[in-house]
Image (tube, rainbow, N blue to C red; front, side):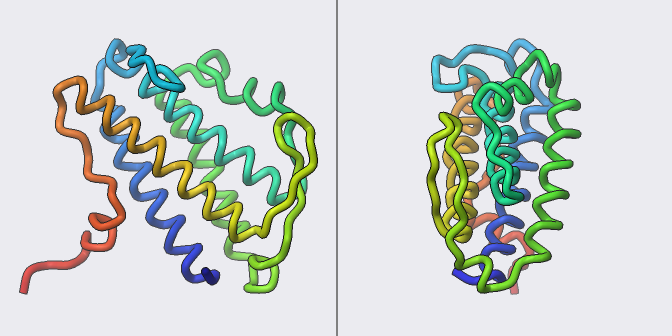
Length: 172
């Protein structure tokens, strides 16, 4: 995977995340906060987790590895009370990530980048693999959001990569 592929992958991720956020924005609070019994309980909780995870990885790419308490205290319903606040904070992460990616070259993308896990334990992976993980993590949790929206009896957005790739294709 090269730098062009990574840019494309994050463009897709941001496009699909925007669709999920738009769908969430159309929901009443009781549906947004409903506990569906999954890992992050609600649509809001899952979106909050997604944004927080993207922030953690971006911090690692800048040489900072937040500890668990610091990382998750910034991304709780108490510190980010509603969808508008979440969207504002997530957009900051996306903007900073775009700046980071625009400064990369192929050698840095392929290089090993050490970081600390939330537990404080040391780890290391190639930057490209960390970035692939971030996109994959978002895809997994978007699938959960789409599933929760479907359980509400609402047609969810189509966030699959295929729809992103075909979005500008018109019939001939």
